[in-house]
Image (cartoon, rainbow, N blue to C red; front, side, top):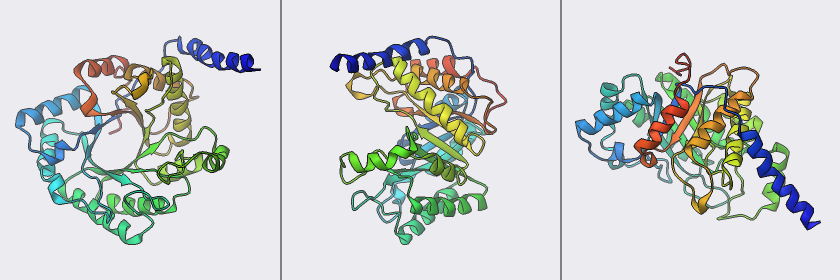
Length: 331
């Protein structure tokens, strides 16, 4: 029996390797996002540094940049000292990368069962979050990008916050963008996993969006960025299959409802796993290959992150992704 099980386990990498060999048919796109470090809003920069940032955004056809501006305090605020150079940054982006949308990247560890930093179930906290969002929109940001973790598919308070935030951003002609974990392997398994898996810090793992919850978020947000990275798989072909599977599933589910960015990493995960930028980009393209038709809304990749991407990786990103059609530019 043990040999039979081991044999089955060996078939998965072998099958993934065979699947991985054909070149992707689908090109990349020009609707792409970048998660950017907090120093851009928190520290002073020279005009040359801003000019170099603008050149990087233009060369790599970024339509959106999520500039880390938080995190939220437990009461929903963000101290002004943390973003004292935000206005200068926004003005510089408009000078050096006109048309690129600078969004305020805000989030916090979601309090679940007494653990975590921010309690979105508290209406007063949600109101303070909205007031903080308004401050960043007043500074000139083109949108609000939320990254609350963990978010479970029964999180009604999170959806309520999205409803209210959408009212705010649309009243200003701005965007609401949301980062979410990759979807469930099987929606029916989610309750079983919650019951069986051990809890870490009081959290119920894995906090994966179901199909219904993903649609609920997409119907409230202008953009959804899927944090597809951290696949923790031992071979490049298995990691690529992971990206392809989630890309196809996500685009089939919400690609006609909202702009989608599939998150790809420019860092090497711990434990020597095989995930990397080249494999992730190839996997995303293979996922697009699986679709019967292109999504109605723009789609692309979200690069995580500017502080882990070196010039050689940017060059590979351009070579492996950017030859996509210019008409799908997300603007």
